[in-house]
Image (cartoon, rainbow, N blue to C red; front, side, top):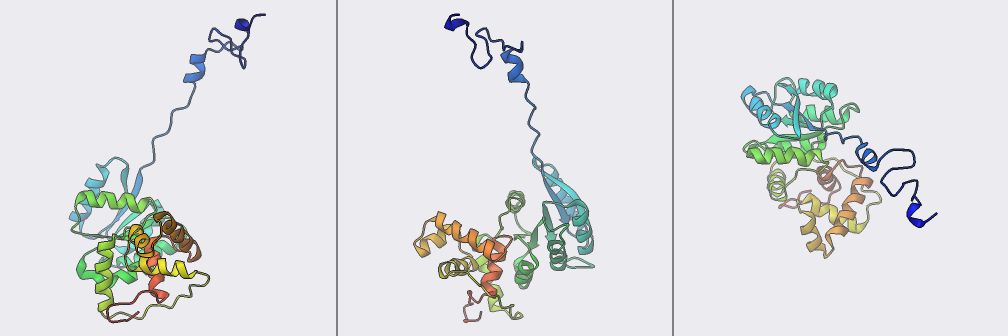
Length: 259
């Protein structure tokens, strides 16, 4: 038998396999990929006009879908358990139960804890920042934000990142530290290393990874590694929770020296 007559791995030279199935049959016999699942959003906003506007915008955006609407904090908690959304867009001031308490219950409930809460806030609500982060919120969005910013914020939070833009965070933190507030809980940082404490302190001051890298003369990759270890050691959901850990660990001080 010549080499031309020999088949390779059960395939003859005329494009027909030894079992009688053609190459074309093999190449087309592949299951199509399922379309990606959209990011599922629960709206918690007591003002119907605003809520309807958010719904129209989100539902008209590919890859996003509204799965529920709540007009009170209690409804938000109930619907979060029912629908298990990826993101909850949460207003702070709502009847029956405010957004902070609703956030706390959603994040503490094993059924709904997978949801990421994005708080809707304005600069005149700075006193809620610390409480919202403590409750488990993954970020903040100003009500004056543009539509594109809202959609980007939902995607960022859904991906597991915290929405704490450094410039906004710095202003919120400054206002928060200058005003009266309850003393934060004291957190034992345990086996967090000295370098990790330095990184954590800068996270608490609202610095980005690149800013931290420049400040500490590290690479961005090294900073990301330290942040990953901090998330694991402190059992933090995301960067927002690291900000809280920095306060409670006594690593962040206000302009007047208060911690």
